[in-house]
Amino acid sequence: MRQGNVQRYLFPAVLLLAIFLRFFQLGAADVISDEAMIAFRSVGYIDYLASPNQPTTWEKFSGPVPVWAYLSFHDHPPLTFAVQWLSFRIFGVNNFALRLPFALAGVASVYLVYLVCRRLFHEQAALLAALLVAVSSASVWVSRIGLQESLVIFFALLAVYWYRRALDDHRFLPAVGLALGLGILTKYTMLAVAAALLVHFFIYRRDYLRLRTFLLGGTIFLLLASPLIVYNVMLYKTFGHFDLQLSYLFGQRVAEWQSLPGKEQIGSWSARVANYWTNVSGVLSWPAFAAVLLSLGLFVSLWFSSGDPESGYTLLGLLTLSWGGMLLVIGPSTRFLSVLVVWLLMIAAVVTTALRTSLAGLRSLLMLGLVCFLIFELLFTTQTVLLRHPRGVAGLAYAPLLRSDVEHWGYAALDQYLNKTLAGHRPGLQPDVQLPFLKQLQSAAQARAERAGLTPQPLLIIYDANFYNLATLWILHRRLVYDGWPIITADKFLADGEDAWRKSGVRDFLFIQLGSDMLAEPAADRTDGAKRLESVLRSNGIVAQNISSPRLGKPAYIVYRWGEGASQ
Image (tube, helix red, strand yellow):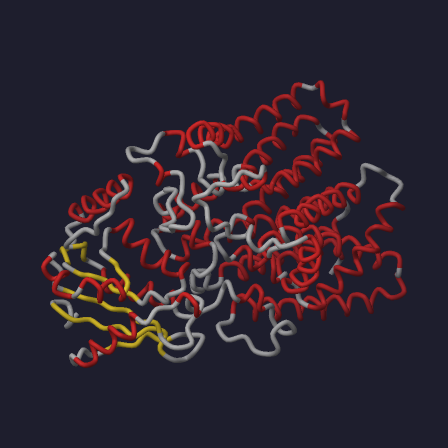
């Protein structure tokens, strides 16, 4: 078969592989990372986290939430929430719908990597870069989790692709503004991509500055960014500070934001440099890490010897430097590194294909090494993000740094259990909430349930306060906020007493206790309420039901039910 025919069939095969790795059992892993904080709010497009350590903008209003407060969120731009809200509306509130937009963006990004590399370099580099991104553990991981970075990668690649087209045809400049604007509506870190493109533009395409297409592109970008501008202007006017990201950037100290996830772990400059090495090696397989290190040096040599300042080497180099430099400021966390990895893998592909051309005598040996590398990478990624029980040495056979966010502890099984238990029912009594927008949400949920003919169930759900907090937010607080089920901790139930709840109308009780060795809150924050309640229930002869943990192979939860629903 001729080489042209091989390449024609190879890229569709790469896309199919990317689809499989990103969609296989997409909803199976537990929601135990920051994706819980995004998804929880996306269900109803509300800015509320049920956390006393980081109250949101909406919680500051004693009356209706003003229109401007819907334009963004207190800690992130709004587009990810809007996209995920749409996914929930179409496919229902479940783990699959939570991750679907990011998996789709991941597949589309593989396609864009191919297009970008083909424009910047050549067909062979494009095919290899797409294949590397398709199977890379970091790229697959970020596509299977509900974090903004999968969308950031997509919009970044789209902006780069259209920018490269614009270098030859200025009519693509408005499209560049569109991609950058959508990117900034996803996450502020998109500014690093915009900075790289602007540096290249002002050095090599200043003649475009007077063109209407340039002005149109800038106008489109500003229009798309305007919700963030209006939101922050009104936030400052009303409360004296900007949103969480900008207030941190400008040194504003907001007293009520006691917890700043991601910011507290940045550390000193020396710690950030040290974490760079640790985290990059932690998100890549060891052969991929070695290949990236070798490729960087060779890439610099190819860059400076290319003889063309507008070459793909310059643009890819600027993108890598801009994003990599930003991480020294904001910290090299795994989510941010997943974007950097895309640029690094493109560099590795360019260098590898250049070596294959220059070392023609070793072409067969290089091809054999590449095939062995890709097989190992595929196995490494499968162990890291797909298998429920990875085998081998952590760090050598799989990436524990990524694995911890896509683990199968059993929280997803609890979510399914509650879906089954509550199916066909609606709350028989409403929890006492104070915030006006929460009351509106629960009233609307009650009205929908009544129209659907659901049976009222006077049920109180009691849970172990030692549940991992992010899983609690997604599985339990979601049902309290959006469905109106009364849900409390075992400690509060014991403090109130069962009689008090029976007097309020509860006739059915469901207690969920966390099993041993499960992912839980830090030891210093744990309580003994669940154990005390378990002792009371056992002494009263209440029979328990176990829900198994796929990871541990033993009970993840012990469920007790008594009252009217005990026989269900």
